[in-house]
Amino acid sequence: MTRKPQIAALLAATALVAGCNKESHTIVAGGDPTDEASNTANAPVALPPTIASSKIYRCADNKVIYVDWLSDNKSANIRTERTGSLTQVTAAEAGKPMTAAGGYELSGSPDAGSVKIAIPGHPSQSCKA
Image (cartoon, rainbow, N blue to C red; front, side, top):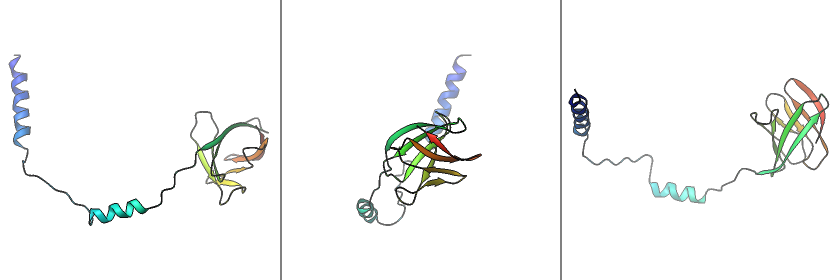
């Protein structure tokens, strides 16, 4: 009884090895790989902004909002729960209100004691750090 599983395993392994093709394969996708390497090496690389400051704000309706201000001064991450998913708001230039789809808006700076925040389902309101 104990030899049947061993024989079955041996037969399966033999079938797998017999199915292998010993020819070498070279797969080339696209054009000349040296051209692609030189183009990639000269491409500008922009790293994402880092978190410059993280603050917790309490709004006029007693809601708590978590904001991570990013180092580019044109974007921030907003969360409505400490471990919740984040929404990134962005502005065209520094100092302008940051917005995101769905009704998110953030006005202010990380140095200010209060900011204006709008999230879906809530009107824009003043929130204090």
